[in-house]
Image 1 (tube, one colour):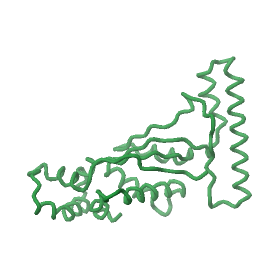
Image 2: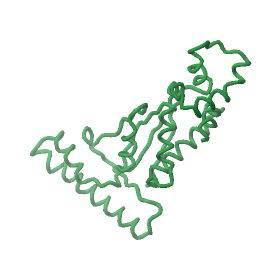
Image 3: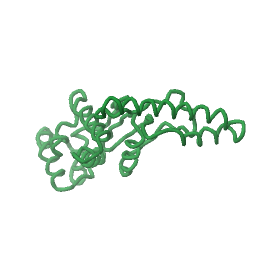
Image 4: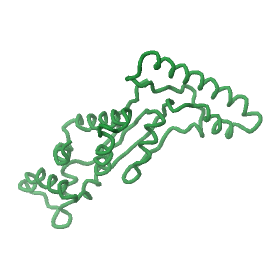
Length: 206
């Protein structure tokens, strides 16, 4: 299955970022100051004054393979991640990520490998539970689940951290799966009704 992402919430706007920057002088917002917002945000972005961009939030729900999960976990500053845990619950319907750029034969191989792994995972829980208890059975039976296994993640970024994430994960040499995820996230942000981050995105050339 393809990795997926949806934008489930957001807070802030270009104006939020501008007002944060203007706190050092005056937050009074006149029409003249509103007209200066695009230029202000561009100046802040170009000169590395990125603290005001930490005052907004983007909230995503992702379903991704294990390798992409690890890529996301490497982003720790201004990023919050909470994920589905096979330690605390049994995964009743584990799904695989199958790379779309693979030949059909190998796609089938990874699907079959995942199916067999899930069978071993489920049978291990049943066999282990009487011997070591359900809690330990669940957490240790995960050893059978392969890298293709997908988990659901709740991920939020402030806008500064989101820009940093995109800068790393949309590079041509980024792993395909995380690059596609980053591209989908950016598309979802650009498609927010009314585009409240229009000038922020432009300021960072996104």
